[in-house]
Amino acid sequence: MNSNIVLRAVAKLFIPFIMLFALYVQFHGDYGPGGGFQAGVIFAAGFILHALIYGLEETQKVAKPSTVEIFVALGVLIYAGTGVVSLLKGGTFLDYGVLEHDPVHGQHLGILLVELGVGITVASVMMTIFYGFAGRGRS
Amino acid sequence: MWIFDLIILVFVVITAFISLQVKDLLSAAMIFGVYSFLMCLLWSGMGAVDVAFTEAAVGAGMSTVLFLGALGLTTKEEKKASAPSWGALLLVVLTGAALVYGTMDLPHYGDPAAPIHHHTAPRFIEESPKEIGVPNMVTSVLASYRGYDTLGETTVIFTAGLGVILILRRRNKEEDV
Image 1: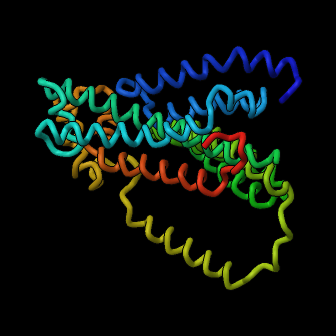
Image 2: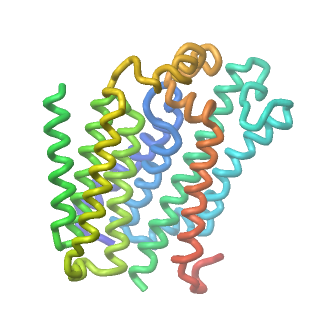
């Protein structure tokens, strides 16, 4: 817990914008630089900033370690699951063209889903690593 | 443009040396951040904005935080180095010289006749707007053409998280498992 009022006020102001920017990077990766990897790191940075300023306990009330751990696996599951769905729809593994009637739309949907999977896994792994390090320091 | 690249490269080398020389590990972690930021400038100078973005987010941002977290668990001061080993220095210099010798054969930076520009790149550039329809070609290569690679990378990150959970997690009762 940091008692510096400037830090606390600025962090409170910044964290929503950091997360909004992460979502922008996530879903704008098709059109500009960015994608799941970068978005995941930025999203996790928002939580880590919160933990650095307000203390780890406060952050873990919002994002419980057990919940974050579920998201670690969920991202990979979404990614691989997209591949399995395209298998079931008669294509090859991770061939997004068969996901919709129009192959180009299928590709868009597939890329959106796998990038989402990457983003979820990266963000939750970064938070898990941070929790792992920061949580041990105070014991 | 090359003068910018030269200045940044010189600074990259300087920061690399400083990070080795400095005894305070906290400063070393900060200098690593500076190093990553300079690399990020170099990548964007080459037009690789996606790589630059990752370097800025992961290299300059996240790894600095993780280094600081690790320093909080261990100690801030570097251990006394053992006496320099001349054999190791010789080995490093030889390896470095071999690598530099290897770069002599590489095509010049931006050479349009380089083999890399004539293998799969023309197909991606010509077909991906029709096949994938995503304006950022890096995304269409990363997520669609190279989907298996990216699945593998995501699995690597997943494994890293799993390792941290298994090794570092505290086992007390307040934390619900």
